[in-house]
Amino acid sequence: MTSVEHRLAASIRAIPDYPKPGIIFRDITTLLGDAKAFRQAVDELVRPYQSLSVHQVAGIEARGFILGGAMAHQLSAGFVPIRKKGKLPHATVRVAYSLEYGVDEIEMHVDAVRPGEKVILCDDLIATGGTAEGAVKLLRKIGAEVVSACFVIDLPDLGGRKRLEALGVEVRTLVAFEGH
Ligand code: AMP
Image (tube, rainbow, N blue to C red; front, side, top):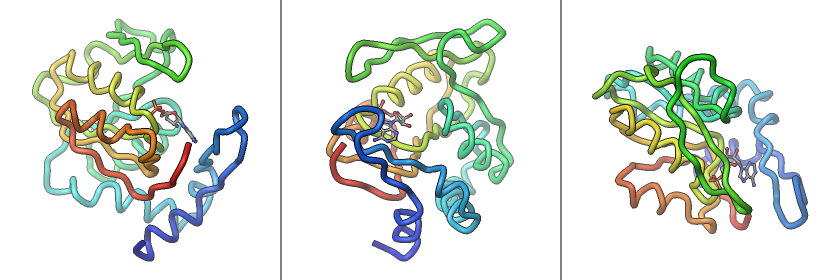
Protein backbone atom coordinates (compact mmCIF):
# COMPACT_ATOMS: atom_id res chain seq x y z
CA MET A 1 0.00 0.00 0.00
CA THR A 2 1.24 3.52 -0.77
CA SER A 3 1.04 6.14 1.98
CA VAL A 4 -1.98 7.75 0.27
CA GLU A 5 -3.79 4.40 0.11
CA HIS A 6 -2.91 3.80 3.73
CA ARG A 7 -4.24 7.18 4.79
CA LEU A 8 -7.46 6.72 2.84
CA ALA A 9 -8.01 3.19 4.15
CA ALA A 10 -7.45 4.41 7.71
CA SER A 11 -9.99 7.21 7.27
CA ILE A 12 -12.82 4.81 6.32
CA ARG A 13 -14.84 3.46 9.27
CA ALA A 14 -15.88 -0.21 9.31
CA ILE A 15 -19.27 -0.94 10.88
CA PRO A 16 -19.75 -4.70 11.39
CA ASP A 17 -23.18 -6.26 10.87
CA TYR A 18 -24.73 -3.18 9.23
CA PRO A 19 -27.29 -3.07 7.65
CA LYS A 20 -27.55 -6.79 8.38
CA PRO A 21 -25.50 -9.57 9.99
CA GLY A 22 -22.38 -10.59 8.05
CA ILE A 23 -21.99 -7.28 6.15
CA ILE A 24 -19.16 -4.91 7.05
CA PHE A 25 -20.44 -1.45 6.10
CA ARG A 26 -17.62 0.77 4.80
CA ASP A 27 -18.60 4.20 6.08
CA ILE A 28 -16.98 7.05 4.12
CA THR A 29 -18.48 9.85 6.28
CA THR A 30 -15.24 9.69 8.30
CA LEU A 31 -13.20 10.14 5.10
CA LEU A 32 -15.41 13.05 4.00
CA GLY A 33 -15.03 14.70 7.42
CA ASP A 34 -11.20 14.47 7.28
CA ALA A 35 -10.21 17.47 5.14
CA LYS A 36 -6.87 16.00 4.01
CA ALA A 37 -8.31 12.56 3.22
CA PHE A 38 -11.22 14.08 1.26
CA ARG A 39 -8.82 16.27 -0.74
CA GLN A 40 -6.50 13.31 -1.41
CA ALA A 41 -9.35 11.02 -2.46
CA VAL A 42 -10.71 13.54 -4.98
CA ASP A 43 -7.20 14.39 -6.26
CA GLU A 44 -6.46 10.69 -6.78
CA LEU A 45 -9.81 10.05 -8.46
CA VAL A 46 -9.41 12.87 -11.01
CA ARG A 47 -5.65 12.50 -11.67
CA PRO A 48 -5.79 10.19 -14.74
CA TYR A 49 -8.72 12.08 -16.28
CA GLN A 50 -7.24 15.57 -16.26
CA SER A 51 -6.01 15.51 -19.86
CA LEU A 52 -9.06 13.69 -21.29
CA SER A 53 -11.50 16.60 -21.82
CA VAL A 54 -14.24 14.83 -19.91
CA HIS A 55 -17.68 16.39 -20.50
CA GLN A 56 -19.62 14.96 -17.54
CA VAL A 57 -19.12 13.11 -14.27
CA ALA A 58 -22.10 10.88 -13.44
CA GLY A 59 -22.55 10.12 -9.74
CA ILE A 60 -24.73 7.39 -8.25
CA GLU A 61 -27.11 8.38 -5.42
CA ALA A 62 -26.22 9.28 -2.76
CA ARG A 63 -22.53 9.09 -1.85
CA GLY A 64 -21.56 9.24 -5.53
CA PHE A 65 -23.07 12.76 -5.58
CA ILE A 66 -20.57 14.05 -3.03
CA LEU A 67 -17.47 12.56 -4.67
CA GLY A 68 -18.73 13.08 -8.22
CA GLY A 69 -19.63 16.72 -7.56
CA ALA A 70 -16.13 17.43 -6.28
CA MET A 71 -14.59 15.56 -9.23
CA ALA A 72 -16.73 17.46 -11.75
CA HIS A 73 -15.67 20.79 -10.23
CA GLN A 74 -12.00 19.81 -10.35
CA LEU A 75 -12.27 18.59 -13.97
CA SER A 76 -14.36 21.60 -15.04
CA ALA A 77 -16.95 19.07 -16.21
CA GLY A 78 -20.72 18.91 -15.73
CA PHE A 79 -22.36 16.66 -13.16
CA VAL A 80 -25.14 14.13 -13.86
CA PRO A 81 -27.14 12.59 -10.99
CA ILE A 82 -28.15 8.94 -11.33
CA ARG A 83 -31.03 8.45 -8.88
CA LYS A 84 -33.32 5.86 -7.41
CA LYS A 85 -36.61 5.75 -9.37
CA GLY A 86 -39.21 8.46 -8.86
CA LYS A 87 -36.90 11.28 -7.70
CA LEU A 88 -36.13 13.12 -10.94
CA PRO A 89 -38.66 15.72 -12.17
CA HIS A 90 -38.12 15.63 -15.96
CA ALA A 91 -38.44 12.78 -18.51
CA THR A 92 -36.11 9.91 -17.63
CA VAL A 93 -34.52 6.72 -18.89
CA ARG A 94 -34.75 3.87 -16.39
CA VAL A 95 -33.01 0.53 -15.91
CA ALA A 96 -33.53 -2.35 -13.48
CA TYR A 97 -30.48 -3.77 -11.70
CA SER A 98 -29.97 -6.73 -9.46
CA LEU A 99 -29.54 -6.55 -5.71
CA GLU A 100 -28.55 -9.39 -3.41
CA TYR A 101 -32.28 -10.08 -2.98
CA GLY A 102 -34.51 -8.88 -5.83
CA VAL A 103 -34.18 -5.91 -8.16
CA ASP A 104 -34.30 -2.12 -7.98
CA GLU A 105 -34.38 0.64 -10.59
CA ILE A 106 -32.26 3.71 -11.25
CA GLU A 107 -32.99 6.66 -13.49
CA MET A 108 -31.33 9.54 -15.26
CA HIS A 109 -32.78 12.51 -17.13
CA VAL A 110 -33.15 11.63 -20.80
CA ASP A 111 -31.26 14.79 -21.85
CA ALA A 112 -28.56 14.65 -19.14
CA VAL A 113 -25.81 13.76 -21.62
CA ARG A 114 -25.50 14.55 -25.33
CA PRO A 115 -24.66 11.67 -27.68
CA GLY A 116 -20.90 11.17 -27.90
CA GLU A 117 -20.06 13.04 -24.70
CA LYS A 118 -17.27 11.54 -22.58
CA VAL A 119 -18.53 10.55 -19.15
CA ILE A 120 -16.79 9.26 -16.01
CA LEU A 121 -18.97 7.22 -13.66
CA CYS A 122 -18.38 7.61 -9.93
CA ASP A 123 -19.55 5.99 -6.69
CA ASP A 124 -18.06 5.44 -3.25
CA LEU A 125 -17.80 1.65 -3.46
CA ILE A 126 -18.11 -1.24 -5.91
CA ALA A 127 -19.29 -4.56 -4.52
CA THR A 128 -21.13 -6.91 -6.95
CA GLY A 129 -21.10 -4.18 -9.60
CA GLY A 130 -24.86 -4.47 -10.19
CA THR A 131 -25.55 -0.78 -9.51
CA ALA A 132 -22.65 0.44 -11.64
CA GLU A 133 -23.57 -1.95 -14.46
CA GLY A 134 -27.08 -0.46 -14.47
CA ALA A 135 -25.60 3.04 -14.56
CA VAL A 136 -23.34 2.17 -17.53
CA LYS A 137 -26.37 0.79 -19.42
CA LEU A 138 -28.34 3.99 -18.73
CA LEU A 139 -25.51 6.21 -19.92
CA ARG A 140 -25.00 4.16 -23.08
CA LYS A 141 -28.74 4.17 -23.76
CA ILE A 142 -28.61 7.92 -24.34
CA GLY A 143 -25.38 7.75 -26.34
CA ALA A 144 -22.73 8.59 -23.75
CA GLU A 145 -19.18 7.34 -24.12
CA VAL A 146 -18.39 5.86 -20.70
CA VAL A 147 -14.66 6.50 -20.53
CA SER A 148 -14.05 5.00 -17.09
CA ALA A 149 -15.71 4.14 -13.78
CA CYS A 150 -14.07 5.05 -10.48
CA PHE A 151 -14.70 4.18 -6.86
CA VAL A 152 -12.90 4.96 -3.62
CA ILE A 153 -13.42 1.39 -2.37
CA ASP A 154 -13.24 -1.99 -4.10
CA LEU A 155 -14.56 -5.20 -2.52
CA PRO A 156 -12.74 -7.52 -4.96
CA ASP A 157 -14.21 -10.72 -3.50
CA LEU A 158 -17.62 -9.66 -4.85
CA GLY A 159 -16.44 -9.39 -8.47
CA GLY A 160 -17.79 -5.96 -9.45
CA ARG A 161 -14.64 -4.82 -11.22
CA LYS A 162 -14.64 -7.88 -13.52
CA ARG A 163 -18.33 -7.37 -14.25
CA LEU A 164 -17.73 -3.80 -15.45
CA GLU A 165 -14.58 -4.73 -17.34
CA ALA A 166 -16.62 -7.39 -19.18
CA LEU A 167 -18.77 -4.50 -20.45
CA GLY A 168 -15.62 -2.83 -21.80
CA VAL A 169 -15.42 -0.19 -19.05
CA GLU A 170 -12.08 0.68 -17.46
CA VAL A 171 -12.33 0.53 -13.64
CA ARG A 172 -10.25 2.52 -11.14
CA THR A 173 -10.38 2.12 -7.37
CA LEU A 174 -8.28 3.63 -4.60
CA VAL A 175 -8.42 1.10 -1.74
CA ALA A 176 -9.51 -2.54 -1.49
CA PHE A 177 -10.94 -4.44 1.47
CA GLU A 178 -11.31 -8.20 1.69
CA GLY A 179 -14.70 -9.78 2.31
CA HIS A 180 -18.23 -8.39 2.06
P1 AMP B 1 -23.13 -3.24 -5.81
O1 AMP B 1 -24.25 -2.88 -6.73
O2 AMP B 1 -23.28 -4.63 -5.21
O3 AMP B 1 -21.77 -3.05 -6.43
O4 AMP B 1 -23.22 -2.28 -4.55
C1 AMP B 1 -22.71 -0.98 -4.61
C2 AMP B 1 -23.60 0.02 -3.93
O5 AMP B 1 -24.03 -0.44 -2.65
C3 AMP B 1 -22.84 1.30 -3.71
O6 AMP B 1 -23.70 2.42 -3.96
C4 AMP B 1 -22.41 1.23 -2.26
O7 AMP B 1 -22.47 2.50 -1.66
C5 AMP B 1 -23.36 0.23 -1.59
N1 AMP B 1 -22.65 -0.81 -0.81
C6 AMP B 1 -22.58 -2.15 -1.10
N2 AMP B 1 -21.87 -2.82 -0.18
C7 AMP B 1 -21.46 -1.90 0.71
C8 AMP B 1 -20.64 -1.96 1.92
N3 AMP B 1 -20.11 -3.13 2.38
N4 AMP B 1 -20.41 -0.80 2.59
C9 AMP B 1 -20.93 0.37 2.14
N5 AMP B 1 -21.69 0.49 1.05
C10 AMP B 1 -21.95 -0.62 0.32
